[in-house]
Image 1 (tube, rainbow, N blue to C red):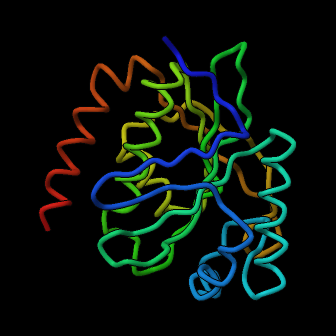
Image 2 (image 1 turned 45 degrees about the vertical axis):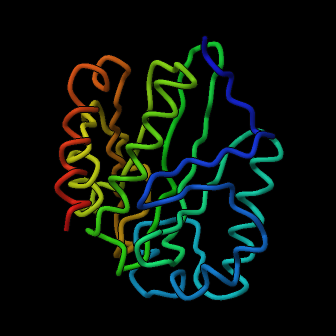
Length: 205
């Protein structure tokens, strides 16, 4: 029997390597050093660098949870014993059985370490096996090559492009957003076993 997604519930997803828990105001100081990394916000329209920006960023995310628009998680790296960044679920539809995943960022020391793949495995498992949803949508700035590679490496499939959706990085033109998704059949037919095998290799290192 499926479990309905509830924005009021305190969801915690974890394994031996990472823990995702609801983002709180009390996490501002824990994320400040990571949020101050210069390149972190290059492809983000909403900025969180500096105490004031990060406070507004987190308060906005929590407000959006309260109005059932988004569900923000803070990510804790159990190996390094440090907070690594944040991610969110949003645009949930009970009727259509769909949800989106995004607004994800991690500090430099956590990128390429297996944190993202561990988090995505836990989130995909939660969405497809507990909530019994049919589809997860993801979007990425067309110039963000690192994030594009990361999304494709976890079994997501490119399915479209929103043209001229954002200002380009140089501010002179417009940039596209690339649309990706993973659906229930992708997860159970191939993506789950593929991602699990990659985690076995990563988590041994």
